[in-house]
Length: 236
Image 1 (cartoon, rainbow, N blue to C red):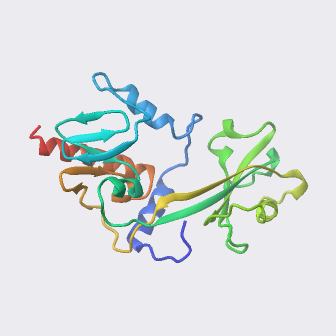
Image 2 (image 1 turned 180 degrees about the horizontal axis):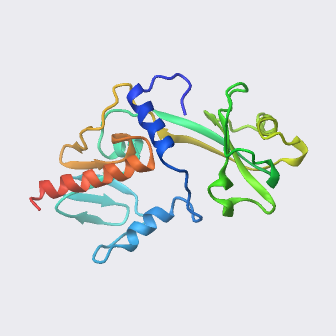
Image 3 (image 1 turned 120 degrees about the vertical axis):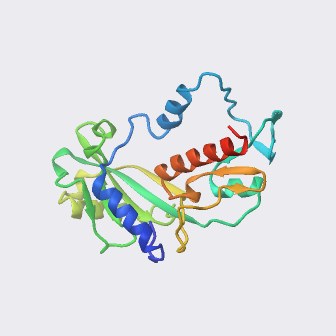
């Protein structure tokens, strides 16, 4: 998701190894299925939603609704929001715009097409190869991403033409389903890549993919490490 190629080679190797050994997957209910699955395992824990946090300390959280006290506090957010509560180093963001296109079912010769000729587009992914339930009726759903924010419609037709070329399909058979613009798609990893970042800021413990690797996997690993650190602090 970056064009300047200034990420560390170690991190690039880690990603390539993951792509090579793993397989793509997505849940029919979207990413929200993951926190719901985690919450379903809780038995004695209370969850309060839709309360904006205004201030935190090592044993206290002040929200729009009330004040909570506990033996430890973990701030598990993205880095920009974390810095509002506990000032720290600024973490830059990588932005992404994705055009979601419906193509005829017989268009999918390969799941992933990588082509850097027609910038700013970077690839074309047949999402239905991994999640057929995501496709429109009698179609495949293809994602065409570009690095950056492109809110205007000037590139919409070019995205269609890009997918048409890579999937050898007439543009008249392709329709734009939706375009998603995500200014904060992933935190940018510094060139001094390290998996052992300090997850404690003062008395508060942090959790987030920006502290590990920018990914769902990184967020989960960071969450586990934050929990282990709290257990150590409490002598559990």
